[in-house]
Image (cartoon, rainbow, N blue to C red; front, side, top):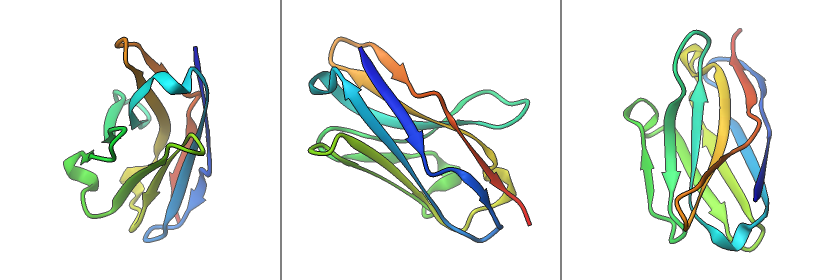
Length: 116
């Protein structure tokens, strides 16, 4: 079992920045790739970014150049820095973790609202 807890969400003005954090606990030694997803109202959950244990990253096209995913394998933390926020970034953001056995775990999600 892996527990993931997100923090750092909230209300941000357009053009602002936000840093989401995700604390992992439990079966952390089995965690391989980690990811951030988001789900906007009325839409399906979509992948935002992924990072392997070796720090290789991948981003969805809509956030390239504005997002940075990073992780601290010592502190068991995952981060997502989002700059130049747009109203279209408003969503519930979910932290995820893949275990080496193919299981995927989700955090409970955290709201990010971009509005003036």
